[in-house]
Image (cartoon, helix red, strand yellow):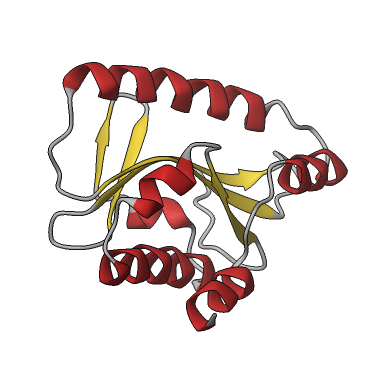
Length: 149
C-alpha cells in the first residue's frame, strides 16, 4: 500500500505566468477579488492544493474561483522529491466566463507539461527556493497584502 501524504509543513506558492496581468485586467473588481481570495485560501490550507482541482483537461489543472470563472494551472505538490517543503500552483490562464477554445487548451496543456517537467527537475530545497524567487512566487501572506491593498 502506498503512503499518501496528508499535508503538513509544506508551503504553497502561487506563480503567475508572465501574461497574467492582462488576464487579471479583464476581470471585474469582484472577480479579481474572488480569484485572489480563492488562491489565498488554497495557499493557507495545510492540505495539498491538488485537492482543490475542480477538473483536469490534458495536463491542465482547473480551479473554479466563481460560478463561471476558472483558473487553468499546473499544480505540483511535494517538491523537491525526498525533502518536500513546497507545493506550487503555476497559473497559466484565467477564464472569467468559462468559454474556452479547444486550441487554446491544447497550448496551455503543453505549457503545463513544460512547467511540471521544469519544477520536478529541481532536486534540492535551494533549487526550488531559487526557482520561486526567479518567478516572483506569492504566498498566502502576499495574497493577503494584495487583497488588503
